Length: 236
Ligand code: FPP
Image 1 (cartoon, rainbow, N blue to C red):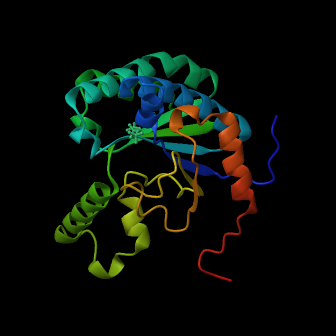
Image 2 (image 1 turned 30 degrees about the vertical axis):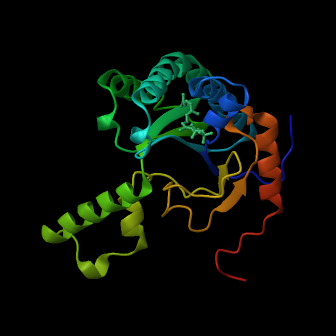
């Protein structure tokens, strides 16, 4: 097995380039998503094997609803299949499943499968896989502001008591440490409304490889690059 001197505790990934992967092959975009789902499975297993504790994948953003209906439908079907078929793999690999984002807007049958998968994997300890679904960081921060304001209004919190941890505790990611490494595939150098608060000190790694081609070997490359980085968190 590949050896590392330093493993990020939490890796977050913006999985980009499915459409371009398909286009390069003169195939409809959905073929790229289907192949991208295979990368999701391989990367999840590989992360668990090398000792990553948290893996957060940007699977569907609050902006993705703007895509054509048939593409949204395909992505939802793919997710539905994934949730059904990955149950065994997650359990066998001792991986806990969680989500961030507003899942109440997803089709009901998907919500049911999500809740079931969370329930049956709740005691898994090796790694937590967190899918960002209908997730947008600005939406997350806006919701946190609303929750905190209502605590103040009810007299349960003083304005003077609000600090950075108050914000962190009111985000979807409350239970989780901030990512150590954020990977974006397909060469785009953008954050695209992903984990804005949480990536304040995260190391960024941009891969030119399109998500459907981003497999184990590419993940190892990203981690070897991370090993070389010196993290100073604003200090010296
Ligand atoms: C970006 O490619 C990818 C997405 C919008 C969604 C991510 C979805 C998957 C990886 C597939 C299924 C996921 C699960 C969890 C089963 P793009 O369409 O933006 O590519 P482009 O920028 O080349 O058009």
